[in-house]
Image (cartoon, rainbow, N blue to C red; front, side, top):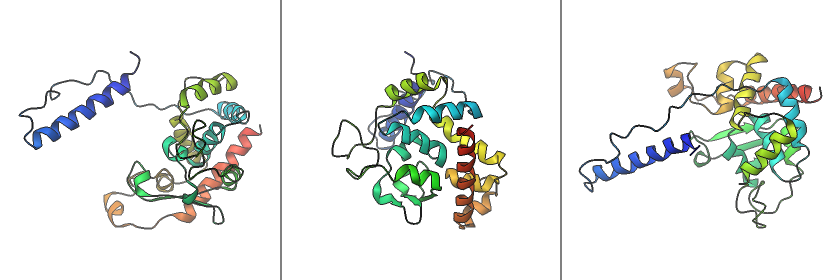
Length: 233
């Protein structure tokens, strides 16, 4: 019914659950064992053009709620949607311009420190402090629930920007591609994205514990400057 990826994820969850049941002797065999995924997933490679970045950025400036800030931060920081939407005040140190995500807040399960460029920090500072979250749900005055009106806001953004056929995750890919275009090395980009280290080899992934803090800050500052250049035409 138009939710092919969701169907795949649902099947994966059922398979995990039934394997758990088999391991504990609750079932002799998983009823989902031979069920094939209902759809084939194709890896996306959508990268926004300079003109599309400019149009989307300009359109987000017309939003009164948190959505516009979230979209701009997604582009500036190259982090994931749920990580930005769930940003907490106690994760921010605006004096040092750092955003620290605990391991339980990241997809990788690793602590992740994101240096905030001046532009990103400037976008965060004016947010009114209502609850523990910066971008609380507009339906929850206490600010305890994160922003969730994704579909409605995205449709509005499509209309306002004139850019369609893109996802919020494409902003992350666009930022990574933009940093590579600026000459930033793959290991630094991987650290910015909080990916498992691959370009440095398996031994480095295990033994290298250098945090690349300075390099990550320089990369995100360069990228923010590039975004400003693009959005100012």
